[in-house]
Each structure stands twice: as C-alpha cells, then as structure tokens.
Length: 209
Image 1 (cartoon, rainbow, N blue to C red):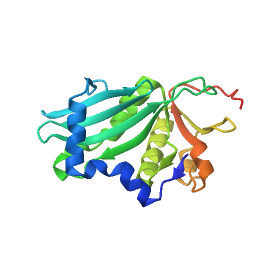
Image 2: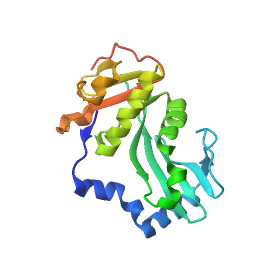
Image 3: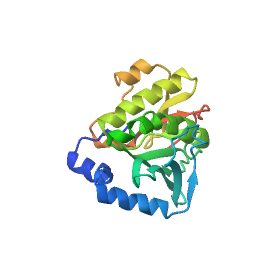
C-alpha cells in the first residue's frame, strides 16, 4: 500500500489548511455556496440539528464530502475523493486522497466514528471498490489496517495491487496486514504504485500489463 507519508513539510500544507480558522470558514462558505447533495441518509448517519453531511462535485471523476456545522460555520470533517478508471481491473475504484477531521473538542461526539461509516456505508456501497491513496500518514495507515480487517471479517475481498505490473494478490489473513508481511507499506518511491483494494465482489485474476 502506499509510501509512508513522513515528510512533515509536505503533510502540513496538504492537511492543515482546514485547521486555520479563516481558511476553514472560507471552505465552509465555498461549499455552502455550491450545489450540494445531502448524503447523511445514504451513509446511514444521523446528526444533531445544524450539522449536514454533503457531497460536492468537483469534476467528472472527483468530488468532496464534508460535514458542516451551520451553527459555527465550520467544516468539521472533510474528504477529497477521486474515481479513476483502471483498465486492468475493468473498474472505477474510488480513492480518498485527503481526509481531515477537526480537533475542536465541541464537535468530538459528532465526528466520532464518521470516517468508518462514510468509508463503508457510502463509498464502498456506491463504488463497490475502494483503493488506498499513494501516500499515507501513520494515522491513515492505521485507519486502513482497521478497514482491511473489517472487510475480511465481513466476507469482502482484499487485495494488494501493483499498478505497474498489474499483479493482483488476494489477502485473506488480517495478521499479515497488521505486521506488513504482505508488503503493502514502505518508504521507497515504488510503494506509491502499490495499492490496497477492498471490493465487494471478487476481482478478475487475468490482469496483464
């Protein structure tokens, strides 16, 4: 799975702009002024009044998901997603390329568990295949370790996919993921081409590069 994301100078610009009060408010206003779709029911989530879980289209193959607090005019949870056609898999996996959650403690009860519910109840249900992103922080890696474990437990299909040579290896033992014996993560650049996949259906084994 992806290259370990350890360069703090790179992490800060990509992930921390929403921690800035003014930039967060600007993002809230940008999303609120857009054409949004409320997806809370589709994600099987309910929120207190003044919170909205919305989807905003940003391109043919990209979209944003955001949990908004209308009471405080804040974005409290945010995901940027892309959907990429893969000719080898003959599918369109969805990938979370940026995920952020507020550290404001007054929102903690609302944001607790949201990541897992959106991942499983919305993204996996709607796109059938979720692929990991190419670089991950330690927190992102831990999240994926859990999701891969859930997928195996629920009878879904987990794979290690090398995009360069189209090698597709199914993983059925969560233990080899937890200690990385399946070689999903690493520090070298080539790990950016190693993806973890969760699929609700078996994927074809006849991939050719």
